[in-house]
Image (cartoon, rainbow over all chains, first blue to last red):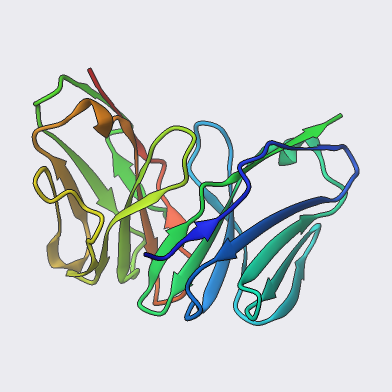
Length: 110
Length: 113
């Protein structure tokens, strides 16, 4: 059974701070990694994806992948109240099965 | 480009009744997923199609849930008979190829009373 683990939170940060969201996965054969944002009552929307070890930056978001440690993270710089949502980590293992973690709730206070 | 379309948006049924959900993926997307999301939890994969073939249905409760994908495009998910614990949001997603990002529809919120 492929597992994707996330701290459920909530993670509370003040506006303007860096939010750090973490995710670990069990399947060493995992090949691609995704971060989705989900606002309450809405469906998940893709923020970033990463396939290779290292960092990938897109605006205020940075995804970090360490396959040896089976660890992927998402950093949000200059956090805004509009970033308050649940962040879902998803892992794709070879045969396209996309497995989600339970999500981390982020609260950004003004 | 049109997104993933799902219907209905909301459905309330009594336990032991049947219900069906419909999904139309993004045009050209070969992979289609059905997920169940219970309040406060992450999406749980029910079934994954590659064109009109099933890739993974290991978590689909086959005694009551069924799904099909006609001609590798639209898909329907059916529950018969429904139980109280089936109350959840049912999300359909599609992706263009293996290991690529999936895009979600708006979901169907099912309440079983």
